[in-house]
Image (tube, rainbow, N blue to C red; front, side, top):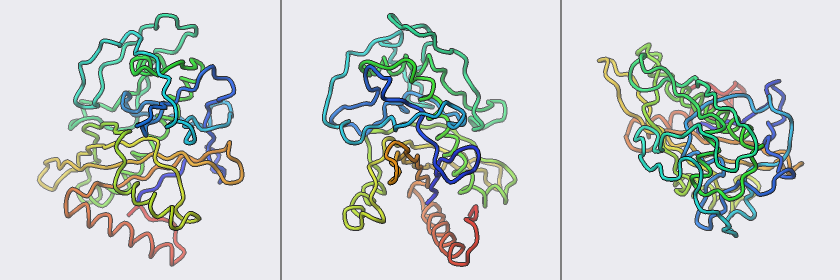
Length: 299
């Protein structure tokens, strides 16, 4: 399955809190479009990265309001420095984002970008994927017409986005481990795309099971979905493209609704027989190891 549960840096069992304080907002940054299943931290417009969520001041509340986000639509018109920037980069399905200060912006947002740990492209010369700066993220949300955005929430949103995507890559490395062990070549990320409005078949299935067995499978719809194209090394030195599907969940803790868990469901898409076999082996191996009392294996 490839589930990733975001936890605090100290290794305790308590999940990492979302560092977005809704009490301080003048308007929620959540995409409340009626037909949307997307997250306000608009992953469609960003590149991956990871910093520890727990390094931010401890605040409460998930940025995704699963109760009301589908009931209202009060978006402003698109604005900001990138409002007319419609040239899309095919590697990440988004435009190049400006680092310019937006008209009417009150706070100075950092323009520095951070490097991820995720190898980019097919050669070492291409380096690693680079994360957007808080200013770029803010401009991206304005470009999407995100309504009234709390400027002081942008930096923790960047941290959440980056932290979760690093977790996604960590899970992909687990799936890829047998192939890496055989070829001695690490996988690389060729491209990715956000698909917040497309619910994956697996997420749909979990919703049905949640209605039948709410205590076991009950959880909200994913607030976002990504499709990542990973390069897997072959014995002949060539790369094989493998598509991965990642569903992003924000689940409130049962004991404290202001203390959410972030959950990623990461798995190879069922595009090939090999991916289907990999998913079966991963699932069956996990069950056997759990039954024997062992820790979860890489694969």
